[in-house]
Amino acid sequence: MNVLIVYYSLYGHIAAMAQAVAEGVNQVPGMVATLRRVPETLPEDVIEKMGAKQAQKAQSHVPVCTLEELESAEAIIFGTPTRFGNMCGQMRQFLDSTGQIWNRGGLVGKPGGVFCSTATQHGGQETTLMSSIQTLLHHGMVVVGLPYAFAGQMRVDEITGGSPYGATTIASGDGSRMPSENELDAARFQGKHIATITQKLRS
Image 1: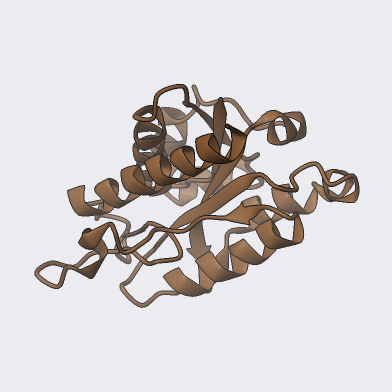
Image 2: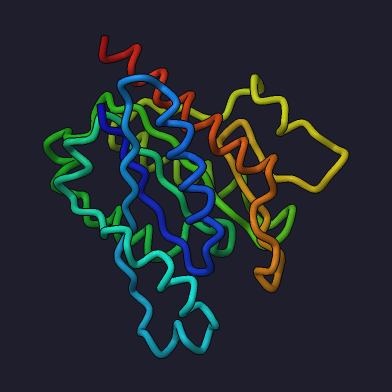
């Protein structure tokens, strides 16, 4: 069964989390993770000025997601950086193109979840997750978060992301901080958790 991981990553933080989510999905027998990017909307010269060209090149092997893939997947997990406490514009534009899928109920009953990144500890992780979850609910998806069974989200001995609404990472204001091992473990846990629930629902 296919679990689709659809993400946008400018500097590579969400790409690293997406890979960890995929590793978690693949731990469940019979479940296969498929990584897909959403279309880029920034001009190439702007990406270069933002210093993101190398990170974008590193993700070029990941195909861009099609709308047909959303409907054929057994479950979908979305990953997005935070932009002013909400999902990024690239993800919003992609999801805004799913009106016909919504009209025919193409995602109704599919398990789904969200993971994200922010620049700072309190940069809108939970608002991004919750506002993204609203779109999943409008599509009739079965929302799955990151339960406290993953105890790593309660750690106070280090700076770390993590929320019951989904796995998160903190990138730092200059993007220099990549996901910690604890944050990657959270992403793996969420991927495995969603894959397990998907398997149970489909059995």
